[in-house]
Length: 274
Image 1 (cartoon, rainbow, N blue to C red):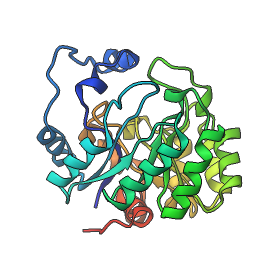
Image 2 (image 1 turned 90 degrees about the vertical axis):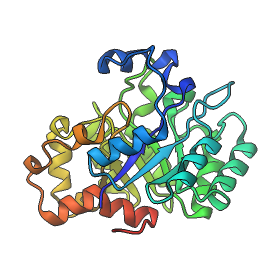
Image 3 (image 1 turned 60 degrees about the vertical axis):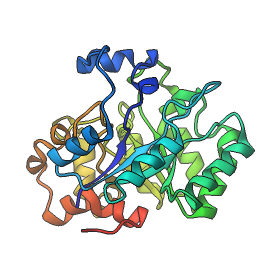
């Protein structure tokens, strides 16, 4: 079973936002192209043999969400066997954010919360996150975030694994934290934090298999790393088939490959493995 832990089905608000100009340039995206329907995302998953995708909602400061929780819920309702949801919240409204997180988990069945720190220009140790961390622990769902530099046109400081993820894991040892985008150029720091903390994980979104740093691949082959790394694409920036090309060249054992592609995600998110 293959689970993609970082996908977003784009809305026009999301795909046309000015901060993603660098990503559109890198991927040669046609800015005038119409936003595809959800069937296009299903087709991309099928082309890469991805069974389940975690669709992220995206909030933004001072404006309507780029992808709302209710939009994600509608796509999941249309394809319940193919998608699960990750909630977004308004970090500037802490109590409203906690209530919305609870609603998405208890009423919509979402599997976790994702906050992208650079979007809010607030590192994960900012006090506005802490009620959300407590709510995630109480609800039994992971916190998903981004580590490393930012491809979008925003500052990268908030993506440092040390001190930020390290400190959050010390303050909330029961909180499962999934760190997307491998942490480059601080990848070794990210691996050190994942080794140190029982409930810290890494996902490989935004990197194709052929571009994975050797440090991550070596970590995946270890006893600790075998249970700590999850597959992700950052679709639609990277198509699943392209992300997985060259997988056999990683020299993972069948058990390591199965854990990476879906086993770790199924265990963490209580997904039913096929």
